[in-house]
Image 1 (spheres, helix red, strand yellow):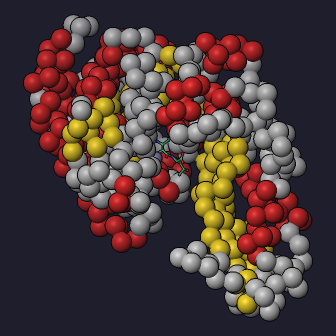
Image 2 (spheres, protein in one colour):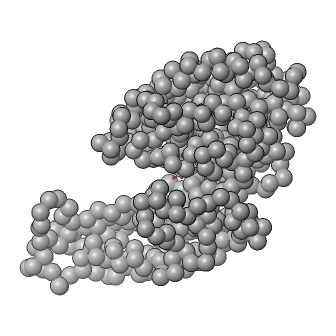
Length: 461
Ligand code: BES
Ligand code: ZN
């Protein structure tokens, strides 16, 4: 088999319009996993994925129901002697609000200036699509793949992958593979492809503070009882000190220190602080003292407030003492912090600092373990070569601040290494209005995904 993939690259070029039309169709399905009203749409997206896998000549395609959203599986076995690649990704998307800030409808894919705008364009429909089309192009031109190929495409990543671990445990044989390939992260910057070798983990809580039986007149009663909104603000403010460190006792106990080598490597990446501030619209950066922005982002844990709700927030003024206050908070974790342990520490700590004057309820939401890969697996070299061929530039190695909960499961439960070759960009508005995907990167991604299969088959042989 020829090592250059010229005819495959030509096939990808020739079919590029059709690829986009099919991706448009995928992006039109509003598969918002967190919204119960979209359940049927989520199912429709699963069926769409199954169709794509059939188009990509998978011999076996199945949509597995779960207690949540379905999991789509596909496989093509070429030969026992070939290595097996497992592609993981997700077909669910985040909610679209605030919808009035979208320039075109979130589910009406539109191309402007070489970018494809739609919810899910980058996270993750556009990115899983590159792996459907690389396989299709391979089989259409060569009637075979250089590896055995499996797909595991889920519909609950954006809500914490709650049914995936169980599915994986029950289907260990089905999912046997030599490597997992994931495209659900971003390149380091425009024109700089990257391989991501670390992800942060996550714990997420809802905090409810309850005061009096009902809302009260703040003049008649203010000054005699605790205000839940104020108590909640104090609790939250107490979670960090003036050096930007999280004050939860035990929080840093298991944090793995950055090695000098990693610090040097992070520092060598072309990170421009002024451009970063400008892009985000902030005058100053903020964070844990003693660490660079990339270190804080990729290798240090955080405590964040994701949402707040209490009292009167309508127009005008109302003198009221609210009965309740609510916050959604989360912590990004790094190796070797354990979500379970942090959850316990947080609940106990919050109870201990909450005054008797209010009632506290803490509810655990989703979470995920942090992950960092060892850099000596042959698949990483295969991915680096593949990205170089697809994008014309050698990738950098980086970590990410976001989470993909299943990656730790692949490592710990299935003992399969993961290679993260995302082709999004940091400014592609994932989870935000006007999410988009650069079309050049989309096609570079398809080419790279094809090169990866080829490179890996040779390296693993
Ligand atoms: N694609 C992201 C993961 C990601 C985010 C990678 C940022 C690199 C940078 C994924 O779809 C995602 O959003 N994950 C959630 C997981 C959570 C719901 C458990 C996240 O990170 O918030
Ligand atoms: Zn996401």
